[in-house]
Amino acid sequence: MLNEQARQVAGRWVEMEGARLPGFGGAFLTGSVLWGDPRAELPPASDVDVMLIADPGVRPGKFAYEGVLLEVSSLPGIGSADEVLADYHLAGSFHLPCVLADPSGRLSAIQRVVARDFAARPWTTARCAGAMDRVRAFLGGMDASAPLPDQVTTWLFGTGVTTHVLLVAGLRNPTVRRRYAAVRDLLAAHGRLDVHETLLDWLGCAGLGAARVEGHLAALETVFDATAAVRVPAYRFDSDIAAPARPVAIDGSRELIARGLHREAVFWIAATYARCLAKRAAAGERGYEEGLLELLADLGAETFAGRRRRADRVLAGLPALWETAMSLC
Image (cartoon, rainbow, N blue to C red; front, side, top):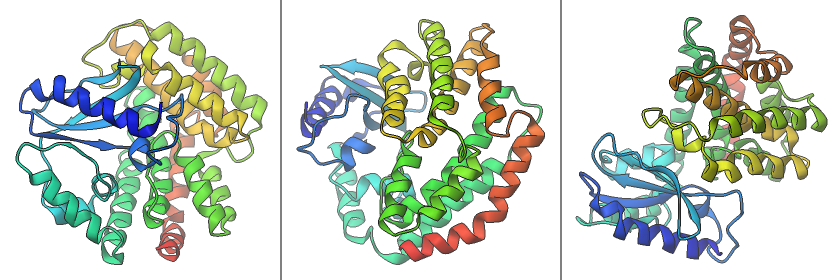
């Protein structure tokens, strides 16, 4: 299936199902399928991201529809065109023809403005600043009393958003799962792979070999399969740890390793492992913690003190990261 065909499937789901959800006010595409070449083949490890304007609490999640894995999220609404231009996730969608449904015509009007002004340096700088703020918010909010999966997620995403600062500066897709591979492509194009090594070092995986990462993926595969059948609708990422999502969660990381991007696969392996344990805890299940602890030990982040030290290194490096980002604009 081609990306364009997958987009059409998403549009049909919105028309047939999404439009019936409470508070429906429109829908738009986000993510890699939107950014990709419409004539390119949909990668096996990709889902199609759809954002609905709908009532709070509407969270369809990941599911298969007409042979496509959709991931459907929702927002209660979006602000003005200027507010969208300053938001790096929303602007990344609206600078492209993303609108799937627009009963009021407002989304299309915003899209036209964002497409026109997206690359203007003041807006690019504002979006980079927003990503920097996210890094500081995550890493400044680390809580030693939180459950281990929550602690890991806060540290991991605070560290990982450093890639978004650069991707946003380079007008690239601030992708979630493939963020380290995407930023490597960007930095290679600018002759700055030294910065990529710094990003990997901040995560703790710069020196990890492929065999070690493959071992961590095997441990993740075990806990993922043991957790996939557990249903916890109240858990935000319930459908991300379920059988339909396996191609993204497991096969996508395996594909990166096969391409020699084993270090770039570590972020999503760790994120998915933490989500597996969080889902198990929400269901009253335990077990499999040792696999995450082994991965964290390899990253120098097994304890809260270790994660705090790593976070402080990132925070100390933000001025240099900003200089790199501004050089990419």
